[in-house]
Image (tube, rainbow, N blue to C red; front, side, top):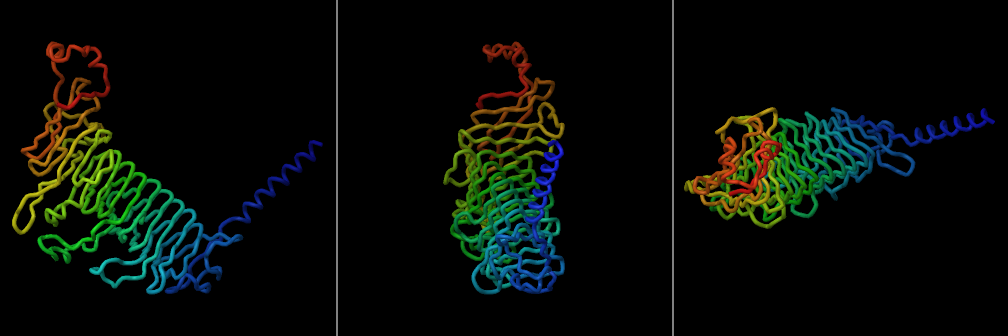
Length: 427
């Protein structure tokens, strides 16, 4: 009986392994030069990769391949080292990748805008169920259609990564985390005109622009390189270690963690056009400028004496008249000052965390927290300088015990020393 039971178990295991093997993806390799996805002879084995009930495909396009997406296939995975582009005419196809895609070559799904060369191609849409990865030599350009990623989107290319999308809803969606790696450039929702050739095409001073930006929905937006946004964006959080520039559209997040530079750009726009840019932290709002509500959180990262997060909302000087303008800054909620990379500020050291046009500030942070420093005796004071156009954080020594008892008798000195993080109400 024991032998029969063992034999039966082995048969079951072998059966399961065989069943799993029979459902392995068929590796389909592009062996043509320039051709259409629907041409079976250009694939090895000679069959068009398009999932069916019995066959799932893992498509690979090598560096010498240039494939035109002329149908709307569904595949399990994609490895692109060559070029995959939308068709020159006909309806816009949709490429559905059930699992994940790695782009080390060029994915060109349409060029948008009347100012772009070469002439606009018929765009294509992309849907990836898992992760989408743009490699260090990849180029990712999508125009006028949608990109949906069910997992994470990672851009590691030092080349300019462009996501151009027309106005609409849910044209770019990342369910997980979008990470723009160091030395990488990513454009979100590129407007109709950008670059030296677009400057000052329309009076009074600004370039042509769409009425509203395309819609972007992201789980968490992490930027370590350069990111430019013309998009109407929603995300749970913005984490910035690089340079993030908002040129058009509003961005709504619940929290911001900033160790780099965030800019509400007005380098080329008129006063009327500046009303199209907004970064809203906490409760979403239709207001332009930087708006932090009572439930919003700004994590300010101090990485060193000259390495820390800054948010620039102005002042911008508008050519050719030299007029200074900027975006309003409205503060509320929590400022959490975090010390990173082993940095400990010296007493008296200051950090300018906001700049704006004079007179453009309203409100203050209702709660301020910080990491302990100076043996637990240091504290941060926040100065709101509306006339000077900045918000400055300064490291100071805690009051002497006698002074502390005079100004705050409700706080015990021992409790003050034991606290690892500080919290005060802004003055």
